[in-house]
Image (spheres, rainbow, N blue to C red):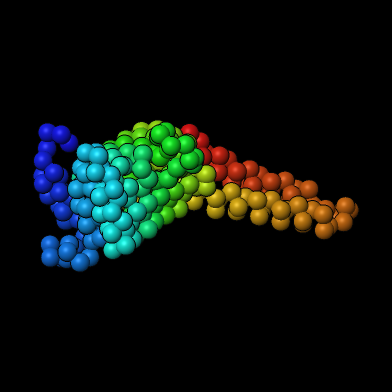
Length: 242
């Protein structure tokens, strides 16, 4: 960023909605409908002030920005180029967070810390090309690798390797390999749903077995149901396999 003027970077910031949001019909809408862009632009100036030791002024700027945009972005955080905050309401990015280039972050995301030790890096690093789904919480001094996809409402507390997809609470890596459409969150499997489906069916089988008399108990029928359950469980294990 030192070899690129702040105005060039801000120009890139304003260009991101045009590239990433099909709902944009006019560049005039950027003035009123994209709080994420304005928060990022204000951050560019505040970050410059913060790194030049005008910390109070930088915090004041971002304090007003938070009131106007509902985005809590600390001026000390490091945010790369061509980053887009889509919708952005409720977005929180902590003091020691690092966000790489070409990162897409949706509303309600938290890049937060898990300790209060001043002077330490307490917040996550999100490397270039990653997408963080709406409501996701990425916590602690961890690293989200290049070109990763974090599912909506996931809670990530461990490193995620490059070009991986992570979902769940706590988040698990469910596959590796770059996705051709990183915005397609509707295609991310719901591993919690699959596990609960297995557990409910297992409990139902056990209830059926207990409820029958021993003499009328159909062992073949039970064996068939167990085989079906094993297939469901194998699918679940395959889903969460690293």
